[in-house]
Length: 194
Image (cartoon, rainbow, N blue to C red; front, top):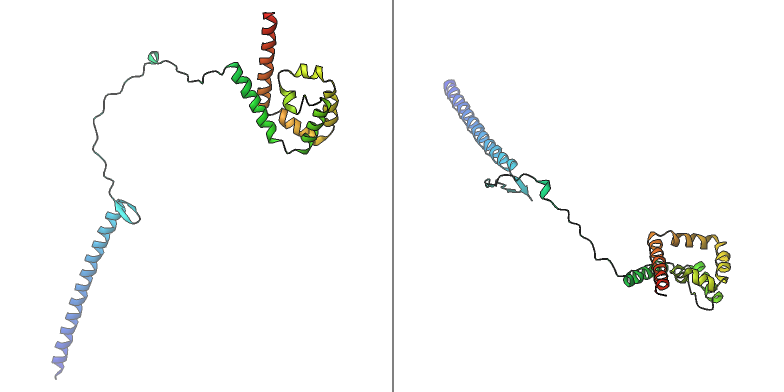
């Protein structure tokens, strides 16, 4: 073969390689454009677990014209529970006191106080419930030894701390006040009827 034949074969091979490269580049551009279009569509949509969601906005619905606020047409409405009857208030106050004292039933110092209190009053006052009622003045008048029991136990700092926790409980204070008010109201009503 002559040199001219080698040159033609070289030119034809170079042309084929060039044409293959151009076709490969065109294929690459087409695939890149498709990937870009697909990525653009997926990024524009919300997706859940990589599944695109279409959140097309609904058509606007006609609405009525706004109504101007007229403060004179409003009326305050307050919702309240029905007030309890006197007997129910007394029972609720006693239940609250019992519930609070029940929380301290395992306190050793309070148990010792209760035992001494019951012994001093011959079982008339078994625990702090008897000293929390509305008839406290009558109980103290009938049993003067209660003050000695209280002063003896208040010297124990643990007992004093426990009693302070009980007596500063807002629910306990409110319940004692309710019992004392009802007792005072009942005594006043009894005096009026006499």
